[in-house]
Each structure stands twice: as structure tokens, then as C-alpha cells.
Length: 293
Image (cartoon, rainbow, N blue to C red):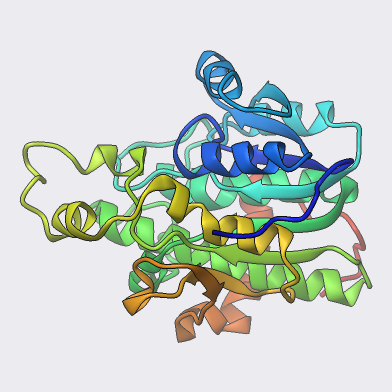
């Protein structure tokens, strides 16, 4: 388990904190003294989760599939934020679009967090942590069809694209932070294979024989263990643009450590291009220095 320092006097925002890895992350940060804002789409479920936690928590509404909701949430944050943890996500849902017309997984997993981070960045003091996935290795950034408007929809490749985008976002965010001399660091984490509600869209009669669901049932670690890389990336002394994951075989499970990523996730040119396109799609730009290139 990750050994966390005292976080008394610190504030953390955790997206998707009402369930799964986000709930464990929020619980542990609050238990170690942080004031934790549970940023959730369903306020009732958020309050249910907060009621199980010790320490100081607050529940606020955030729909990462709606840019109006994201702006409203960010506008209401008027205090310093030590840790922004971009945890919420979708995995393999049926085809759908966000309120603003983006494919659900790319829109919520990447674009929603991209917009949220840049809107909050002037108030972030320490770290931005974004949760990616082993599936980033199967992802490709298709700039000709990021939102699946031309191709037949395939939930697996769409998920992989969104998780690859998470790592490219982290890398480009750190480059920009370095360029303006910001003390904030951007890190990423993945949970290996963990038993969470993220798999709920995959557990259907038509998919129950799939290799992915079999792997999840055979090798998944608990939510508590799956949250450890996120906690490690949040509150331990790791460098910017680092990536934490399980230390076991194929990074499926085990104690957290810094791990590698695919060559596609290290492509600086693609990271910069994705950043520019993301700014255009959501209408939100890097706020710390307009001269960053």
C-alpha cells in the first residue's frame, strides 16, 4: 500500500469520486487530512460515498460530458487546489455522444478533463494526476476522425484512443508547465486490471465470453489495490510526466511503481498536435502563458 504523508491543509479534487478507484482515492486522501472535493455527476451517489469517509469532504456536481457543467464547476472553485485528480472515465460503452457532440469516451476521458484542467490550472498549486490505462497501448490518435464520425464505431479502439490521449495530454501539460517555470507537476497512473464499475458496460450477454471480461474476472485486483498507483502519483515524490502502475507481471497487479509507456505515448509531435486540436474542440486554452508553443 502507498504510504501517504500528512495532507492536513491540502485540498484535492477527485473526479468520479463516488465509485471505484475515485472513491478509494478520495477516501484515502481525506483520511490523511486533505480536504477532498468529490466532483461527481450524480450528487446523491456522491453524498452516499462521502458519508462513508472520514475527514473533510465536499460534494460538487460535475458532468464531464457537458462543457457548460465543466465551466460552472471550475468557476465555483475559488480556493487553491493542491491536487487535481482526473480519475472519472467510461470504458466500452455503447456508441453515444456528449452534450457537445463528442464521442463519449474521447469526450469524457480526454476532452472533459482537458477542459477542466486548463480552467482550474491557475488555482492548482502542486500536481495534476490523470488516470490512463494499459489499453493506451492499443490506442491510436486518428486526427482524421477523432470523434468517430466516419468510421463504424468500435468501443475498444475508441477507449484505447482516449487513454492514449490521457498520456499525451500529461506529457504536453508538463512541457508547458516547465516552459513557464510553474512548480506544478503533471503525472499519470494506471490501475492495472481492477474490479470496478468501469467494466459495467462490458458485462452484457453479448460480451460475457470476451477475453477482456475473462481477464478481469481472473486477474483483477481489488479497488483498494487498483487505486494505489493513483495515490502514488499524487502524493509521493515523483518527477513530472511520470507514469505509475502496478509492479507485477505485465503491470496487471501489484504494488505501485513508476512504469513505462508505449512509443506512441512518447511522441512529442502528436502530443502537441493533440493539444492544439483539443483547444479548438473545447474552446479552452493553456492559461498560464499565452506565449507557450
